Length: 80
Image 1 (tube, one colour):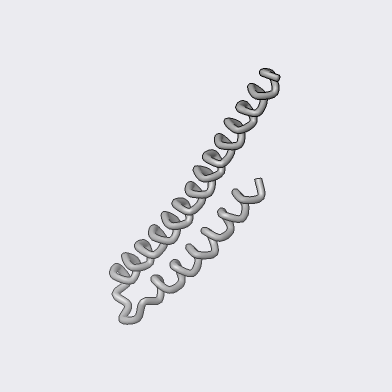
Image 2 (cartoon, rainbow, N blue to C red):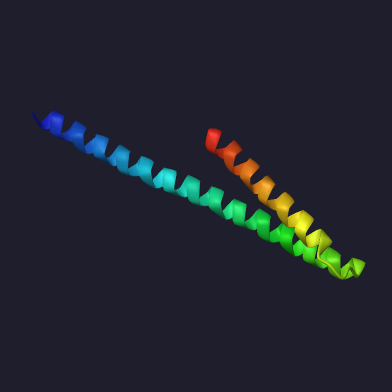
């Protein structure tokens, strides 16, 4: 009887630990996505300044590439 209770407690601890591990994993993926998008957007803005373009050509191109790269890394990490 006591062994069953001990086993139930161990199973509950494992489930709680798994939930926390999953939360950390998915929040890490979200932070990676935000970082990729912000860095590429900032880079596009700086390239537009250096090139002296009136329209934001590099900003648009690099921010779109950043979104696609963020989605790619998120899907790749999610499927592991």
